[in-house]
Image (cartoon, rainbow, N blue to C red):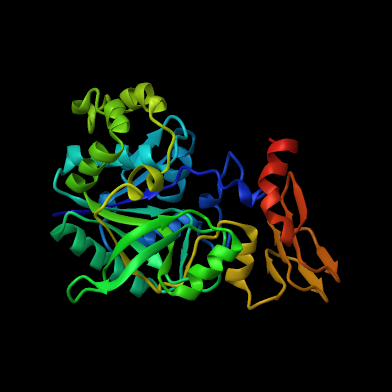
Length: 351
């Protein structure tokens, strides 16, 4: 079976406002200050497993030009453009149908576009193992991250400790949605749970069969004219039918309903960079002050993150437990402990 990788890049990343906006979401930002956007870094990791023409980017139509800008070597026909944001289950079904038209026995991975991986060799090894297992078995395979803290912002995977044969692959018992703190603490103490990182591998026949069983209404909408996939008429067809698909995540539509889900525990130096707090945790050791950008001067500051994407001088003294983000058209100064409010505040006052 040939291998492919689909990178999901349609999200807005509103929790990273004001750096991430509807016009330029966080996957297209150099949020780490390393000279590469998150989607560029994800694409380069993908090419350690498959050639560029076996990579698909699934994004919203309005971000196609950004994908071309950041990934110039990607064939433009490999950019799958959603006309509406209907969550992950419809876009993965669309991807499976496109790959099915190209290579019906293929196996493919689905990866987020905006995560950070520190241990890239281990990452490539674990994904290769997942590809092999999904090739040989009718299996849905997910990479699970060993929890390091009782985090309430992640979904969890409850898995059997017994391995499948000699492989470090485990049967999944169930997926758990984002828990409260007390529940997350019990998950961590039990040792029977992994974080759900949203990285999946399956064959085209396996995932389409699972949609037919567990989410048939999505396929009913997308397969009205199945012969159009991979043709010049595909985009017009998708524009017409895709908005009618159910707005639901692949976790709810497939993973929580399927009985052939497996996980591979992966120590890959992973961070989803879902919030400013997670970026601070990724870039610091404990309560350090973190700054990204030029001309930032911090004095007696603790447990703060300061981002500047311009050349003005910034001097901050004595500030603790704050997020400071200075962009050309917006300035955010917000307590880190109240970060979960930012998305709602932005929707209320800005958007």
